[in-house]
Image (cartoon, rainbow, N blue to C red; front, side, top):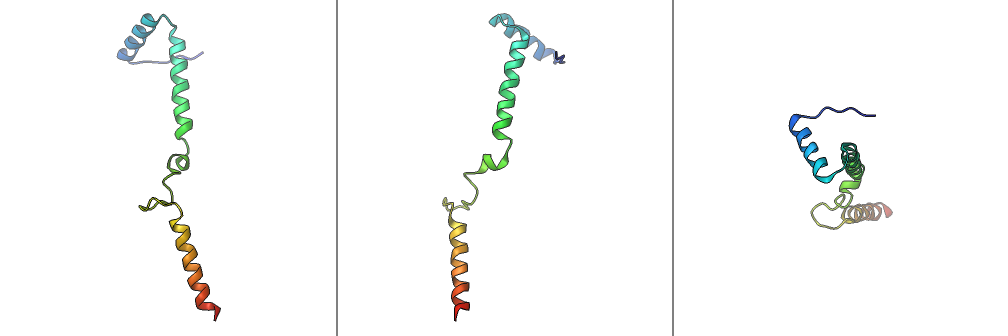
Length: 82
């Protein structure tokens, strides 16, 4: 069991909604909580939210940093190979 306090406006809106749709208040609250928690799960991990942006750095290519690191390593290897 859950007891919640709503503002007067929210309580009126909920009362009007359940009367119009002929459903219990508990069903509306349960469905609203499901939607709320689903949204939290989808956006809980910042890496997941920005995964497609990491490493892009304005060029819209993800491997730019990796390529840069590879080039630096190659230059260093060339310099110290002789």
